[in-house]
Amino acid sequence: MNLEKIMNDLEKKHPGEVEYLQAVREVLESLEEVVNENPQFEAAGIIDRLVEPDRILAFKVPWIDDSGKVQVNLGYRVQFNNAIGPYKGGLRFHPSVNLSILKFLGFEQIFKNSLTTLPMGGGKGGSNFDPKGKSNNEVMRFCQSFMLELWRIIGPETDVPAGDIGVGGREIGFLFGMYKKLTMTHVGVLTGKGTNWGGSLVRPEATGFGAVYFAKEMLATKGESFKGKTVCISGFGNVAWGAAIKVTELGGKVVTISGPDGYIYDPDGISAEKIEYLLELRASNQDIVKPYSYEFPNAQFHQGKRPWEVKCDVALPCATQNELGKEDAANLVKNGCICVAEGANMPSTPEAVEVFLENKILFGPGKAVNAGGVATSGLEMSQNSLKYNWSAQEVDEKLHSIMVNIHAACVKHGKQTDGYVNYVKGANIAGFLKVANAMLDQGIL
Ligand code: NDP
Image 1 (cartoon, protein in one colour):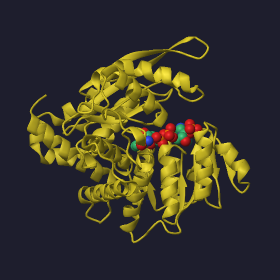
Image 2: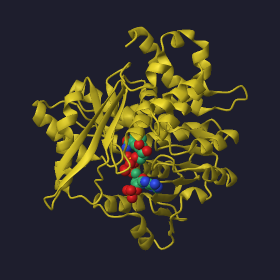
Image 3: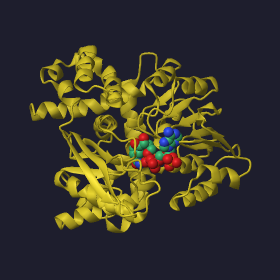
Image 4: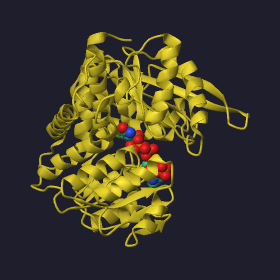
């Protein structure tokens, strides 16, 4: 495999798609050895076919705001690869959304979904619509208009979208309602649904819980646990709050959370009661960062800063892509951090990852660490097919065992001769092999 030639060709075909090119390079770097050892992959053009999505639907989303003004956003669905199951991946509503970001996320999703051991292909979608500050009616009108295009290419056996940044239970409800109306069916076409109309228990907290289960396994390889550890978390969205709850449950002390404008440092620890308080603020659509520092006077708000300057044993970046750079990584290592597990997708820049790997600290990449979210979406799909609901305990146990298995697969494919586990390589190879072999079996398509 000639990595530089593949990357040069892709850069020419997709100029400026920075995040997508970054994600492809990161994966292919890990795969060079395994592709060179398996000439059948090259002969079947597996890599050339894998790096391009099967198809992309791009559309406009007109809607009327509360003042009666017509607004127009852009909508996309990237169906990347369905070799091992229906396309599956979230929808992101955020002003920063563009095709490069959705292609990066869709590409990563192929390997993540493969790692879960469940039959799910990779896809991603979204819009540059910003739900922040919009009324419920505005969000509803937007979601309905979005679904008026999307419904044509999704279905429970075709493509099953879910939530992501800016898409939670409310948005999934409005999207599902419109799909149901258009198709006259009540089927498991979306995951993250309300629990009284097809959703799975534990789905909201699954990504954060899964991330902590994965980090727990990583720590165990060094004879360590969360008990008594100081933990820095970024963000306070769907992933971060689940992670904060589970870390606290396992005896760790969460000392930071963050938003785009800064982070909160609470030396007393963000206890379960404080997490409850934060969730209430979040549910009422309020800013959480500043009110928290007023409510708990020992907590300090650090405007414009990231939490990675705080001394900690474990770091869980759970906010967004490229939120942890080289300097942040160097700071964490210098301050004695022994484990970084990515709850978000690609939060560490390639330079930061290099710092972690060079210093041989435990580093878990997003596609393995945060796979618990999509795994539980897969469990929601299974429950929808069975027309049966599992209890919270059953779902949590399945999630836990999936995370343990993903960790074992990463160790199997990522353990170096000196005993260090390169989880980046391990996750990429384990995810890739299953998809590549399925593509081989299915012919050139
Ligand atoms: P949310 O929108 O629920 O939360 C994102 C959080 O990050 C918010 O607290 C947000 O603050 C904060 N944030 C946004 N931008 C920045 C920034 N530049 N610096 C610091 N904080 C920031 O999203 P999710 O929790 O769902 O997703 C977070 C990450 O996890 C994403 O990378 C997503 O792709 C990934 N992921 C999510 C899964 C899920 O199940 N939800 C599954 C797998 C991965 P504010 O609200 O103030 O903007």
